[in-house]
Length: 419
Image (cartoon, rainbow, N blue to C red):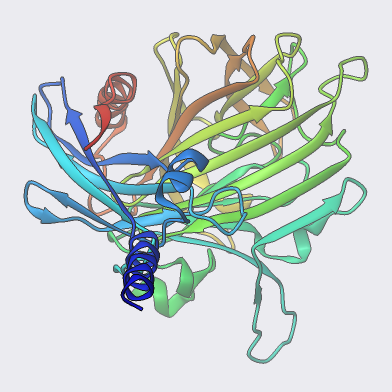
């Protein structure tokens, strides 16, 4: 009898231990630059080996820095029902180091924090009275179908307190830009189309005409004179991977894309990652094979009469006056700054293209890209004269971009050390 009681207690303790398993890490951060950095993104991968060690999937976490507990989010990026990444933001003073304690647990649920970003994908409801657009998480269409008019508002949305973007659901997949007056998340209310009352109350607006260009930072192919969009594909997929509270992620997948009729098909998976406290988006591109044979490109719309910005080393941008929709009867005219930053290993030079039309020109400042591997990444960013927290002129924008590039290419060092 005594033996049976001890065995039952052992089994109970063993079961309890498995249920409440924890793994603790120290995340060591080092900022080597002599400038302070705010909202530094930090990701801690949760791989299958860690899940196996814990005896089950991670269900909750705590993140503690020098000043106490930090907000975090757990993401399931491969949609298998198991969290595979922990994400948080941390401020770093100039030339500083910091240690963050992370605890992952197989019990509980993720803590709830105020959302500082927004991401959405919706099917349009065309009811004239009180339309209720249907939120969805993913949409796949064959190349013969164009969902542009069926997705609200023409594509998935990303927003932080600083900027808003939408990715058009058609062959262009151009990134359109929504400017802010105040640092706030507002696309849940305006959805890129603020009312007159909302604008009078300090809300932002759609400020960019993208045309048949990159808009602000889309990746296209390149045929030697102009960009090659995603016409020649088998299917297109748009997915909302994460909607906050600290980062929003939109993913597009173009299956069997051919940059030219003679090129081998390739699947292209693109992730757009926008973090709280940021006006820039990181673009991560994964190909289904190495693509040394392909000429690629990114860039920004050349706003008519704009001032070009380039360092001929991967920073490409502009500053000019834009009218969204190219329709001054509907939209106000605004000064807009756009830019992309391409790491040295992918940058192959600058170019420019235009379709030559006088009334509705589609022209762009181009950064040429290539990679011998199956992946690449870069960033894009934007500003406009709506901002009460923005830039006074093109020089201020250009100076900011130089510092932005320096910060991107000298990232905070992150070392993950299990305890």
